[in-house]
Structure formats: structure tokens, C-alpha cells
Length: 261
Ligand code: PGA
Image 1 (cartoon, rainbow, N blue to C red):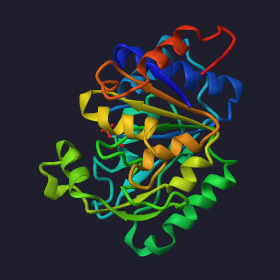
Image 2: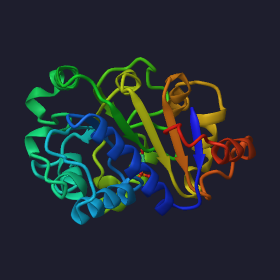
Image 3: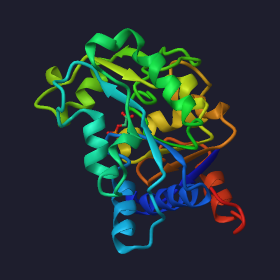
């Protein structure tokens, strides 16, 4: 795992945009795994800025898979994660909506939705680069504490904490759906490169548990320790509880110019 301590969310956005663009330049038909939530937004805005400036790669052949989706929102609800990722990123990059995927929350198909999503990811050749956030409780996508570390895409019930954390997108925590479909931890671990972003003091405990704590279902994000290519980008506020911060900073300062993230 590479822990990259950076000063600000803006600096992280530039590094994440570099990583995403490199993946797309290396493989124009790249499969990207996308996170919603607030944390990746500056990186998405940076990608859009570069695209509009004409310096970005071609996005024509890129396919995307969202991490998760709410269950029970009316069709076309603006807070659905499919609507969100189109609004915040893929429409502006000119991606054909047919290439932008999320788990299907339609009630009639829920029992097979997870299986169908796994099959779609496999049919696309698997995820090359997965962007991730982390919950204040250490959740990864919507895999809450106690989730199986081998889980596939499936239905989960959100914790009260997560519904409170996401209340800002709705009128109140009560309006945040209780149920979601989420890529499982096993699904996420199959992506070829994981890039987790954490910003703000509210994430400091979760980052320390994920990076320096034991690998445990009590902190689902700790599974990044099992992945052969995981990059964790943290701002100055989110590093506060890391015991080995000096070492990570030393490693990053000494990073050879030939070594990419
Ligand atoms: P956030 O959500 O980016 O909105 O903080 C992250 C998460 O819950 O995984």
C-alpha cells in the first residue's frame, strides 16, 4: 500500500486526475470504478476542467461502474448514484450513458441485482482502476462494519451513522434510504488498482484504522492491506491519527521519478 500525505483536497484532486488519465491513456477502453459522495468531487472537477481545456484523454471507449446505489428512491431521483455520477462527471466528459453503469435498484429485480452487476463487471473485463472513499466508521462503498471480506455485490442495510453522514444530500437522515445495493468487498478487491481518497478531520480515525489497524471486518477499508496495488491519498486533516506519518512522508519525498502511483 502506498500512503500519500498531501496538503489539501485540491492537491489530491490533481494527483487523482493524473492517475485516472494515465489509466485511460494506457488503455483507451479502460474500465473505471467510480465512487460518489463528496470526497471524489474535486478530482472529478479537475478531470472535467482538463477535458474542457482539451488536454485530457479521449473518453469515448471508457466504461464505468459505480460502487453502489440506494434502493427505494423514485426512478430518476436526483440523489440516485447513477444520476449523481452522470451529473458530476460522466455527462461532462461526454461518456455515452450506455457505458455508465450502477447496480439496478428496481424492486422487481432486486433478488438478482447483485449477480447481474457482477456479471456485467466480469463481461467488461473487470475494473482497471477503482476510486474509493471511506466512511467515518471505516465502511468501504456501502460495506458497513461486519461485512464479509469476501462479499459480492448485494443488498445491505445502512447504519444510523451512515444515514446521518448522508443526510446532507437529503432533507434529513430519515429520508436517506435504509437499503442499498453495493459492490462487495470481494468485488472491490478484484479491481486492479485501488485509489482511496480521505479528506477532513472526520476521516482521521477511519484512515488510521484502515491503514495501521488489523485487517478486520470491523473496519472494512482495512482490506486495502490485502490488495497488491492500493494507493491511499490523504489531506493534512485526515492524517492526524497515523502513527507512521513521518515514514509515509519520507517515502513519498523519496519516490523515484520512474515510479508511478
Ligand atoms: P463522503 O463519503 O465522500 O461523502 O465522505 C465517503 C463514504 O461514505 O464512503
